[in-house]
Image (cartoon, rainbow, N blue to C red; front, side):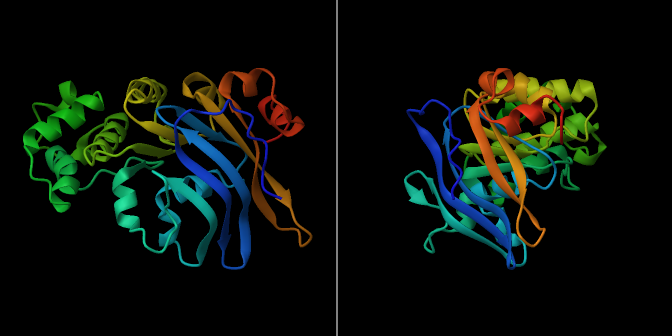
Length: 269
């Protein structure tokens, strides 16, 4: 049965609408049918124990699962009125509109400037590149720290700066949505705070979906929280499922499901 614990208030404008989304790796069902609407210009957090399908589902929104051998996605995800899994949809175009920031900072082995300019140039950007680089770095709250060393390697920056560089790199492609897969897990507390503050600012312009194992982080910065858990099938294999999707304040104060309450209270996970 599809997950039905979508208890958030109905958004007036949804960026994504997932309907019966299931993900297989070969014959193994990794994530069972998920229904969810993602409202625009909100931060949505995915929480839950390891192996519950958070990152698997996140990768569905820009078809990154296509790059995993044997992975298969069933169901629909509507974006701008079209199912992104339709055969006529170009996944490369989707990935330009739906940017992604990964768990560990992964700047290109190029200069700070080239880290930002590489993607737009490769995609035929004809505007003023210097302005685009500066604008992207400013939006990522990094410009003042790097404006005098744009020719230096991005890999020479601190971990927190590298992650903000990766966010700036994603912003330079002018996406509508930013996906973040545990973007702070490799960062120190100060860098984590900087990235969280940046996320709050970016929400004014972008829809953001974030996977995090840090429940305090989810409670601090997200507007909506989705709790995923695992269920064991008859063969003993575990697959992920969506248990509850509610406003963050509600799910942390008074969750609607016993599973979410047990996880948030620290009784498991």
